[in-house]
Length: 262
Length: 262
Image (cartoon, rainbow over all chains, first blue to last red; front, side):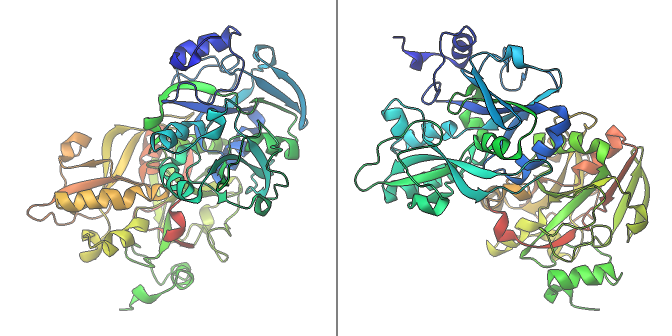
């Protein structure tokens, strides 16, 4: 088994593009920003951009492509948006219609891609601060949950927030809140900690996306807004066509996380 | 002369709507957010929203209206976007075509209004921190300057950043940088301090918008990104039609500045 931890972003993108890596990306290229994806027909682009603007805790937009373009040189010179995510999802009328490791065949000339900041960007800062990131320790995908928190609607888009979760002691949670508050472009501070039922989460051991992780004695779950929110919105608002990443399977960019601090 | 300093936001909006107050709004309703305006035909709204997204230091969007609507209840229940700014500007093909204290006659059914955060929102925090805000001391409009800093273009929009300026000692400037960095939705930290010529500003005593203020011995000019940037962009990109506020003559909202900290 290869040691992916030493790969550069360009090397990881190449490995992903060539089908050599198809897994979740937490813990890879820790110093570089990763992105969530939602690609929508241009006719829906204004409504979604406004939705993201109104819900910037869950949907902090890092960049938007021109219609039909698979390139975004601001994120990486060699980027191919249709091939550089390890795994894609196709939604039709709000229904999950398939998962793909290559989205080239899905790419329409009217698709506008929204690249949204990812909490993986602050995990390096958490580890540097001596704070635990359990899904990295356990070699799993991050657990993510649908909540009862409504997003502010915009045009055709409405729906509830999705959150990611990391278990910590209360003292660790306080420090994590301070560390992540300094990085608003990758979701910033937690939105909740403690009782999952306050967010409408019934079983913390059964996440809606990703894998469950161990909650140890003395730990509470700490919840951050998550860039999978647009996928939940798609299942509720049912646009005719949308391509997203598969949760936890992100685009690795050449943007250093330190560049996301303002 | 009336003492406007004790007016609530709703009372100030009413006074402005009735033509009783037509001046700059720095120092009024210090605890409440003020907004810059650019209203554009719906056909240009996506390009401008993307421009704002790509240039969020200068153009942090607080809210966007529906096409043709003069209301934005999220900012204030009684709001009338066409009457509640003390002074408006009309731009046609990028040329300043007139100034008005009431924009009702200009409002088109396809106008989308972008409300952009204003540095007046952090002036209360500066004063609380014991830092000087010279234009308030001197009872003047804030000085604003065109710079040589290019914004990132988006669709039809491109142009250079406008900055506001407040004189401080270097030690005060350092503290002001920390105070304002915590408020990214109202321009955040300064973009420059010291030598104006580094921004292409030739004469600090002749601002492009607003009034000059006194620079005292031992003080340096401190520059923040400014929500008048869209007006400079309009003069460069020349959209057929745009309505803006007159620089320094802002909308006073019911949103407390403390609510803009995340």
